[in-house]
Length: 446
Ligand SMILES: [Zn+2]
Image 1 (cartoon, rainbow, N blue to C red):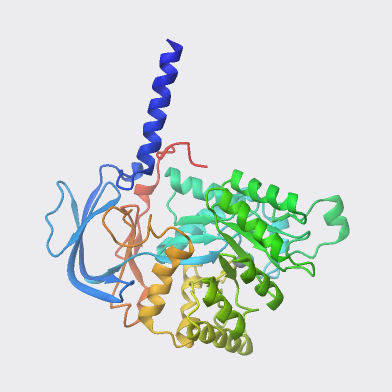
Image 2 (image 1 turned 30 degrees about the vertical axis):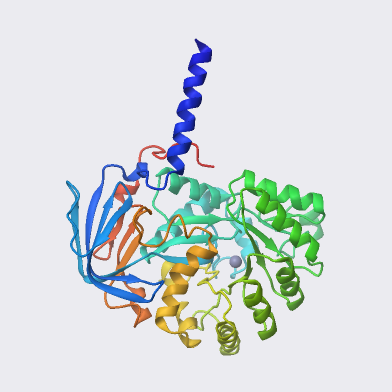
């Protein structure tokens, strides 16, 4: 009897796994919903083209069909976006949702933020920041550490289980680096209080590197983030290759490297890292090497704003972008926007980074492709989510005007659909459908 029960249980579990892997299976959080979206203009960022008057049919959270004049599924609600452009959701390939440092009280030094704010508080901040990002049209965020004790994983789980709305998260868990990470604490704080952890995970030897990658994977990392050269004892090419090998071994994860020196960049490129985070060290020569090896440039190019930056730094940033573009380096829209600007939401701080891309002279339709298609690719999700394509989860946004000709239209996102549910409509957030009284997508999300 017990044996029979166990066999049945195994069969049921197997079936559930099979369903979970099936691309066209209904999304449980959206089961029973059906929409027909009338798009005045449907944008394809991949080809840089727009098609007028398209209908997108959405059922159980997924895109079912796209065409000129489709019949509505039974009971479908019609959403009239005939005065709008409909396009896939945007990607910020480098953010830290569970970190918000401020002028007061910590003078924008996140070492103090980490001391003052618990992981629990930061997880709630992250949920709020995620919604602010979603409201600005960012349906995917690559979240690269500095998130306390796995607040990033907690947020991803909460979103995937159906507790709260938020972007699809590709999260790194704790940043792995040589002793100290990016902090410069006192010996007392490091040796007696282990202050660097959990903001950084020390890994100096090969055994520690393997262990650190495995710890992050165990606690829900979907990408491995390392500090290549944050200290005067950077990782060697062999060290970085070991990270890459161990991450690949853990379900094919990619390695993102924080790089701040030319030597660090050279080593990361030679090792074949997936992405280089930040632009500060990247020269024309290094861009050529990156293009040759197909390494992503996640430049986090800060614009000159009244609240941030200097003219000299901005000029360097823009020159670097021009060099990368001319050398055909794979580029991602990325911000590192993890600070509070009074009066602005996290999404508004992020969208202000358009200023850097415009200043680099990159055509608007190419910027849009970078913010969408390239984003799905650097997140390594392009086959599973992102494009507006039958079978994929229904993630899309709408803006007035045509972003292919005027990228600034992205500053005003009127409509956001995530997993086939409406998060924002007529410019107003409508999160009710995302809030469930239990983990509607089950407890097997790790
Ligand atoms: Zn960062």
